[in-house]
Length: 148
Image (cartoon, rainbow, N blue to C red; front, side, top):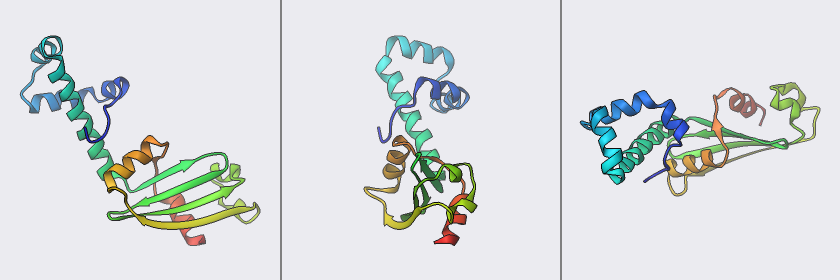
């Protein structure tokens, strides 16, 4: 596997897509039930392949990620060949509520960094998601970029 297997709840939420995936591979519901009982390893392999397809499609679409804690916000612009970070450390409770006006009042440290992906874009973004990053839009990133 390139990424990781989807959880049972993730698979359940993608049931329609999984059925379509099986159909593309010539597997109807009766054959799928038979596979699970008689060729469990093959059924598990199909779940792994489907999981990788879902992860790949998700990662291909990522433009912005964010990671928030009580003391920091890290915003990432995920470009084709590099990733740009805008980070904020300090008392950010109000900022977590979306109040940019508090930036000048609080003692915050704002920093930026750009780097190339390691080992590659897919793996780095996957690891970031597994490490707690979530999908984001560009709004806060672009507002902060104007300030730095």
